[in-house]
Image 1: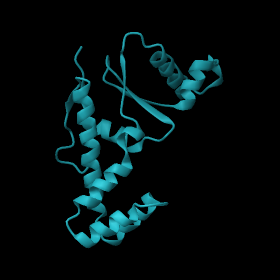
Image 2: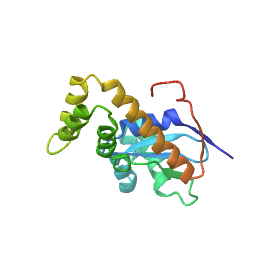
Image 3: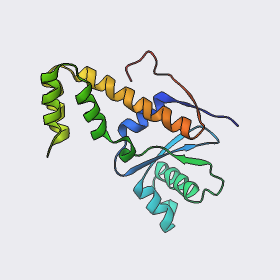
Length: 163
């Protein structure tokens, strides 16, 4: 069975990841599953599913399937660390044509509070829309690269949208 992933869904998953999440593509269904670390802990510990809400039971069952995946049915999507938000911010800083703004952005991302300082800067200079478009394109590029590296067909449903 050949699956086709929607880039919009992948970008959405990449955009909202946290340190405690892991996302997987089910190669049989094309579904993207995001699970929390605690779902995997519960699956490994063999906790009774009766002690959990229905949605938690489904997540724990999915975690069990992923942990015991002997048929390579699940592919891990890029993690928050693979995305490297800081590197995307840095590339954006250097892409800004106005040298004064570019320099201010570069200075903002050095040291403590880089993410907050960067956000303050993009709003102060009125380039927040440019940043979010740039970031969306970067996430889309990561998704495309991942699909190509894993021989997964994809549909670009983001062509005319702002991600």
